[in-house]
Amino acid sequence: GRYMRLKKDKLRYQVNVTGRPPNTASEIFKGISIFVNGYTDPSALELRNLIQLHGGEYHCYYEYGITTYVIATSLANVKCCGWKAVRSG
Image (cartoon, rainbow, N blue to C red; front, side, top):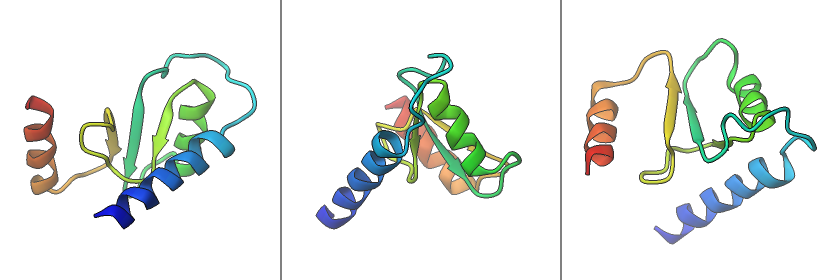
């Protein structure tokens, strides 16, 4: 509902506006938003820094229709099928 939408908006602002590195190294991720799910190597924090350093947007939650990519070592079949259905329209 409304509470969760506001929470996600606040987090997106905190992470991508106030928490963004002051300078960008490149813009290879410009226009791309990425959600990191579960354990990854490098860590989600390192990936967040790299994504932002190169012009991308990091999402703390997957947002249907807004998040463009997911980074994960493994995903439950239900999540894969749900995300594929949303992406294909």
